[in-house]
Length: 320
Image 1: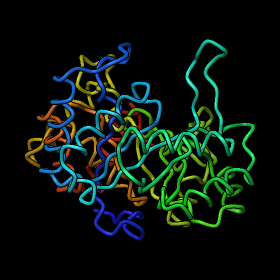
Image 2: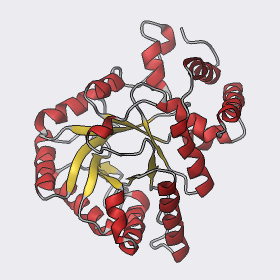
Image 3: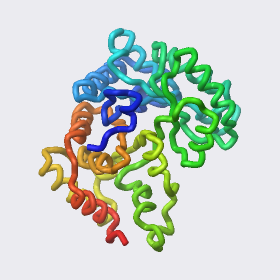
Image 4: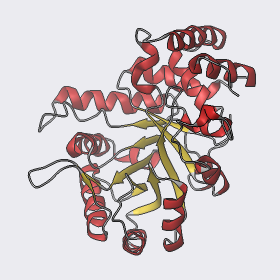
């Protein structure tokens, strides 16, 4: 298994992260129930039992209730905070009474968002804060000033980004004293333009690829941890196949699962984790059985041939 870039800052961080977007009850409800709280507690316990000690949040998940319910669990178990790593994100305004969904990476909003996250989580600091989306109006000097204050106050230990390309990261890094340690992107066997970009150089097969060229290489070179959101493609490979390519991939996933004593989930994650970038999948399931199945991926290393066979299946034709 490839080493995680994050180990340079978080020594014993787990190779798989638990995404907390599904905690907090019904996203359309204003509150959560005792059963929702019990589910959150179970998810955290199962994740820890399986060696997952990294928990991913965002201020907007369930309108803040994901952080709130997680904070209730931390309050019940005061010694838990020092056993885990907590990452949260800021920068997205969901649609509200005064306007559409929008981004805000202003100094004021970053500070306000972190204060809100810490209050809901009932803890004193975040291990990592990510800028959730690139704001076209972002001013690097403002972001740097916010990061500097949060670092000085001990409220955030490390900083990163999400869904940004190399140019945006490079621009921010010119102004920010602290190294940006994470870039979280949508990566999975179906959403695989990060591979297409790498193999279709100077070939017409790559004409529809939109992944930012050189992004993974930039992250590798600068020791930025690549995290994968939606690493299981939102259950695409668990459902009735929508085409021959998905069906072929499912058949091979099942064969590999049998060989490695795993599941489709564990093989899908192992395929991502086989990449030299040392990708850290962020799983989002709230089912204990699936959390355990996903954790198994840390023990699986596909061969080069197996990796390419699965890629070829889902492409439906050979790489150039």
